[in-house]
Image (tube, rainbow, N blue to C red; front, top):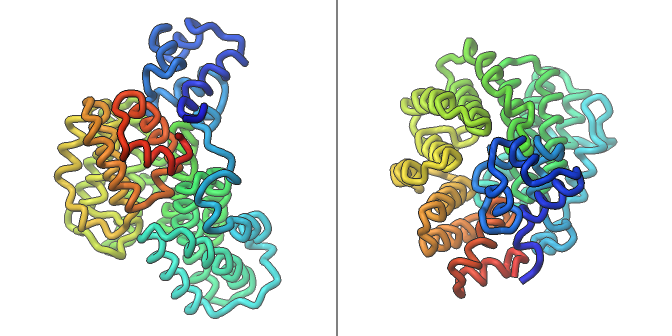
Length: 395
């Protein structure tokens, strides 16, 4: 077993010592006891809530990413399957006022290519996503910069989807949070040029989730403001309702990160109200619908340290209503976290193995799950768990 298995606790200790803080002072700054922080640092207590990680990061004056940590990209197993260099190049070098010098295929064709990207992402086929997406983004930048209407507006909307939805989701699941943030910024820039409040809200959602919520990123913490801005423009069309609903779910998470449980419930209830008449559609934006709201409510209950409530929400979700392997995996991940809180170790391992089969990179690069597996290895070692840990470079 490598030293990486206690990464979060080790990182907390290293950050505290670098600041020259005692256990007592650091614990007091985040509203916890000296004994609690000592158990975290020694690996006897797993950090299960983003709100605790956020409070520690603030107290220690570091980013939450620094506490969560990730293996270096060159030693991640998935890097044998594909390269992110083309994606990095297009996000860093292509701009709406300075597009790449390439021949752009018609917008209609790029729309069909983006549909292929969407389908690949739903299957957690990241190799296909990162192969197709860079060219699509670069050529859409050309149309947005040089095209006439309506191609220009169409290209900007597709860019918001490509960078704000597909790009941020893919890069976050691959553990590339810095690139995910840049992708979200590209979507925001496209939305500013488009000038449509609903599409601006769609771009805001992507930026809100480009970084871990434990960082309390401003884009996430202002989700309620973004939702309020979109609300007057919600009409009968499904897309505007989907954007508004997903922003309300983001607002719920923002509340949960600062322990505002009542606010989280109110925002989630509003999202559920919007989702109910829409039903679950495989082509819904961000899969907004009752089933996905149920996944979010499961996660919110885990963050509130209500594992029983989380499993109640999870049991009400019909997985077949979730067209995406990513969202089905997310449901399994949250079920695993809830079972672990209840001490149901075998059930937690079973859920994690299901999640891995659905979306391996999403599981392998999830910092809280990496720490959960490290903890389970000390409490419930077994062949299935050891195999999962080995595939995650934890054993």
